[in-house]
Amino acid sequence: MRRVTGLILLLVLVAFLVWGMLLIHPFGHPDASHMDDYIIENAQEETGSNNVVAAVLFDYRGFDTLGEATILFTAVTGVLFLLRTLKRKRESS
Amino acid sequence: MLSKIVRTVANQLTLFIVVFGLYVIAHGHITPGGGFQGGAVVVSGVILLLVAFGSQELKKSLRERVLSIVESSGAVLFAILAFAGIGTAFFYNFLVGTPIFGGVPEPGPGAGDIWTGGVIPLMNFAVGLKVIAGLSAVVLAIALFSSGEEVEE
Image (cartoon, rainbow over all chains, first blue to last red; front, side):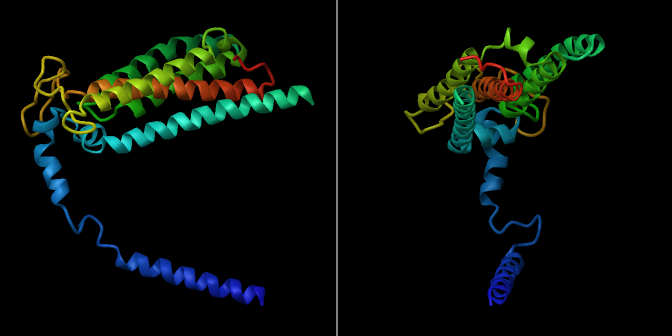
């Protein structure tokens, strides 16, 4: 019974993923390219940066980069905190 | 600690790795790369030193407390630069056209100039500081922990 339920769930999941994959637009042909065209046209004048990727990262999508920096900060804080706690526990035991 | 040959070669190579990483950070607004990538390159030099000399030797020159402070100041610098343009919008590039990094390159492909990009080179620098200090602290902490020695507060 459990096996049959698992198999049915797996088939449903696979069907869902295949359905999703079929709906993706062809590779290299995005549905809406207005934003790309705008950035390629205007990034150099607006940000003064020759590297358009850097212009998107730090100017147009700067908020996203702030999130990335926060992730890095949280990861470093977590690792240092965890290792110190483990160390103290190892010493006391 | 590895043999003397490895230590000598690591000693010489680290300088070039660090210079290349700083180059990638400083030219983030002209060539491919930036703060994250250049910082990772610099940290690979730190890891080379860590492998060659061992965590005990490296602990004497790289203090975790200092690294934490540098990382936090990089984050604060990034946030300050983001808030500095809030007169127009959050993350507004307010330095374009001013004497500081204000140059605007010719549209289209070109060699580029280091004195362009507005706030982008400064943000690359802040992110680079953050990545260098943060990843170095993590790698050093893990190496010290796995060697069973005391973690520097």
